[in-house]
Image (cartoon, rainbow over all chains, first blue to last red):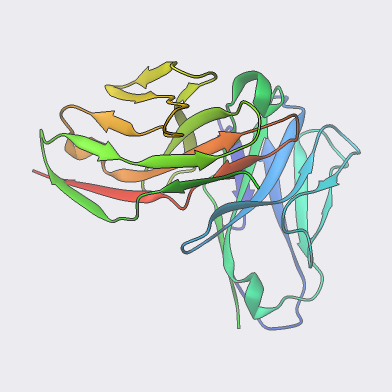
Length: 115
Length: 112
């Protein structure tokens, strides 16, 4: 019973490098989200998806791109990493919009350090 | 804009002590309020929720009451256990947008 799985869990990048974080869920959820967590700032929404083939910007989308080619996967890409993107990234999913149940299912997080 | 503010931690309590973690919110309209918990090495999970004023959410001995007059949703537990050690996040959902507004999290450590 995997739930929401994020890979990789840890990564160190140099400024300017690119990388992709993968989020996979096995619960057949329509909605998927990428958040970042920074000290003293709580979780902030980067991008989200309301279904396969759809994506939308959240609160802090700059410097990131996303894709949802398959319903179960939601990819977060950094084309040219910057030190300001050092953070812990969380993926979440939900079957219904938050306003129906309020329940998001989160992955364990991916810690990214950009030097 | 909409937001939540929760008490800063870390909070350290002895086992069986009473716990309160304060959360206040700012929102237009009629938000729903949530508490999430993150145990070490795990993702966040929903602890409890309240969708309208005066509702009380409860789960695992934790309670929180949605108080519109004080714009608060404080988390309480009468007797904490070591297994309650975690980070607790207050969250708000408003309108029909697909996002929550999370607080900064409060770290709780319970010592035997």
